[in-house]
Every structure is written in structure tokens, then in C-alpha cells.
Length: 552
Image (tube, helix red, strand yellow):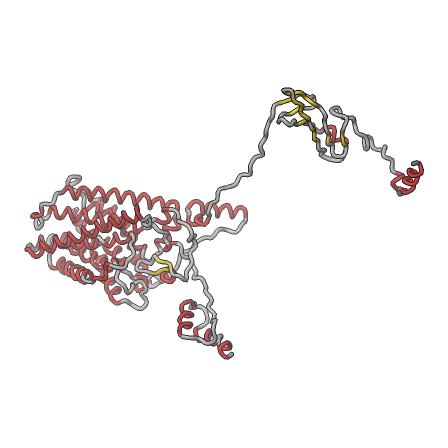
């Protein structure tokens, strides 16, 4: 045994022998444990054999103490806690304490939040840009004014609200958007349709030519109250959209079709003033006319100026039947002003409206090659052709004080356009319902009201029958739209689908097309022409680039 120890000492390196372990106090010394003699000083795992009697049963205690560092000097501050198998706890003094369970805090996880809509939010977008500037991070995407040709390239349909198959949008397609983003400006068309009905039933109850019908004035009162409620509701909702999602409103304003519906709220208010029941007010203050016509004048200065400027939004490029809404406001305002006893103001707006109506009428009739908004198929939007001459005939009659020759010329133009559209049977089939249809009902009602005025000037059985017939058609059309609106809103739930018209990107996505087969057939060339961009190489050069494959 001694020989082994000597051999062990000799085997140690000389440097290790020179090191004395006692040079550092407490380096290799361990203090006796005050809890239990059995201890392992390497990991400070102490096995306690204390036995406590609890209900006649013994429980074995185990103490585990891990050192914060290998230095023994720090081990004296180590706290020792004994856990019993029964869930209790014993401190260093041996006193048992009740069981305490401390749960670890769960990491906080933010709920899944889709930030793809933030760019359309008014306040969130500004805040994100400010924070990005402070943190010197890449700024979120900022939208610029879309050129008008992008709406024509990315969208299709009479209302330019359907996304083309080759286009992509900047909002998610796999989920339903927030309600305000899906609420279009064309919703004011409901107020136009019902408000014009209130005016029609007021004329039926007050006109001498239709006195044989004995129409109650309470119908006008009910319809007027409904119109007021609808207008207020739509206005509040769209005002919230303007506040929270201003980018969506701005994109609707630059839309070549939607921009005309910005006249609809003010025309709806003019309808409320014209159709006010006698039970509520006999006359209206004249200053109300100036308040209602000021916004219309501002919109006209902007839009009519774009028509004349010759830019991207010149009339020959953006002309579509919905432009009649921007013209009808002049005639409705002239009719209301003349009813209030004003003279110069109504004549001014009548002249402005007539000048631009003639230009618009000729432009739409010509169907210029640059005009891409008029579809080949028929659509209720074409009934807007009837609106302007119908209201113009009544406005001029009110200004002149009688339904004279000028009023009759405008009325006969409206009547001819009405009949030319009504005789087409295919007009009423194959169309997708939308809220914009409501704006196309008030031209029918306007023609019926003009017929009532004409029947009062030329009273005979024919004019009376014509007036009653047009009133019935207009009422049935509005009732049918009301039923469709309720069905789509309550039953089908698709009254407000995702509005693709506001989510198109500024640039058209590039799509590359390759010849998969040798040669180029007619179908391949046609497919290629669908996706080629104007700024790329011409068709001939592109076809020559594939000629080596065809020679194999």
C-alpha cells in the first residue's frame, strides 16, 4: 500500500507538487453541515434522513442545494429548503410550513393582428410613419394617386368594380375586409331612389291632372321620413370611413366612375328639400339653397376642369354614363332654387348643366376609340341618360313659370331615351346586383314626375294614362330593388363584398410568357398579346426571340 502511494507521488508533475493547497484559506475545506452529516461538497446535494411522524406515517425529506459558483466561500450563503413527499416544506430550522406553489408567468403573446389594413387607416398610418422615422426603419408603404389608366387596366365591368384575372390587389383576398372598407360611396344611391319616390308621390297628391287618383299625402310623409333616416345613416357611416380609412375614400375619389357618386349625398339632400311634406314645412329658407349648392359647385370646378384640361382625366377618356350624376345636380339645384323664388342662381346652374350635358351626351353617343368604359352589353347605368333631360324640363318650367316649348323639348328627349331603353328585353337579365343600381332608379322616377308636370300642362286621357303607367313602373322598380337589397343583406349576406376597386396596385404585375411548344400558333400569339406590356419589346421582336426553338 505504501509502495503504491510512493509511485503515485512520483507520477505527479513537479509543477503540481509545488502548489500548496493551503495557500488559499478555505480552498479545499468544507464546513460540516448543520443539517445532516451526509453531504457531497461538489454539487451540494444533501440527503436528509429526517423522519417526521405525520398521522402515523413516516415521510423522508430530501434537500437539494446548488451553488452559484465553484468557490466554497459563496456556498455559505446558499439557502437550503427541504421538500417533503406530502407537498409540505421544511426550512433550515426544521419547522414545517404549508405547501406553496408558485407558477411561472406565461409569456405574453399578442393576438394575431393583420397589419395589411393599416396602410388604409388614417391615424395608424401616420403613427407608423412617425415611429419609423424615429427608429430609422424602412417606412411603410405610402400610396400615391393612381393614374386613371390603372383603373381601366385593372378593373372591368360597367361600374369598373370587377378585378381582372391578370391583376393583383394590395389587400388580402383570403378574408373579409372591415365593414367600412367595404362600404362604397354608391350607397347613397339608396337615398336617391327612395327620395325621388317621395317627390313623385307628393306630385301625385298635389297635381290637378292626377287628382282622380285621390292619393293620400301621408305616403309622401312616410317616404320622406324613410329617406331622411337612410340619408342620415349612410352619411354617418361614410363619415366614419372618411375618418378611419381616408386612403380608401381618396381612392374612390380618383376612380373614374365612383367620383361621380360624390355628388349623390348633396343631390339626396336636394331631394329631401324638394319632397318635404306640407305637413312639416310649407316653405324653406333661401339660404338653405346656397348651403346645398356650394359643395356641388366646388366638385364641378374640379371635375369639369379635368374634363377640359386634356390630361389623363379628359372627358374623351373617362366619359361613362355615371357622369350624368355630375350634371343632374345642376338641374336639381335649379329646380329647387326656382321653387324658393330665386332667379339668377337657378339660371346660372341650369346654363352650366345644359352646356356640359350636351358635351357629355355627344361624347357618349360617339363612343370614341379612347373611351374604354362603355361596355357592349346593356346595363341599368344607361338609364342615367334619362335623368338629365327629365329634371331639366321641370327646372326650366319652374324658371319660366310654365311648361313651355323649351321644357317640352327636354321632356320629349327624355321620353324617347326612356322608351328606347325599355323596349330591349335583354336589359333585365344577366346582371349582378349592386348598390349602385339604386342610383339608376331615380331617372325612371324623374321621367314619371316630368310626365305628371307635362300632363298638368297638356291634360288629356293619354297623358294621364302615361303618367300613371310611368309611376307604376318606377314604384315597382324601387320595390324590386328594395326586396333585392334586403335579400342580399339578410339572407345572402353579400350586399357589401370586398371592394376590389380601391385595392388595386399602382403598377400592373408583370407576367412572363414562354413558348412551351415549338413554333407559334394563333392561340399562343393571342395569349401572348394579353400579357405583353407596352413598355416591353414589340411583338415581332418577341416572336423572333423564340425562332431558334422553332428551328430545332
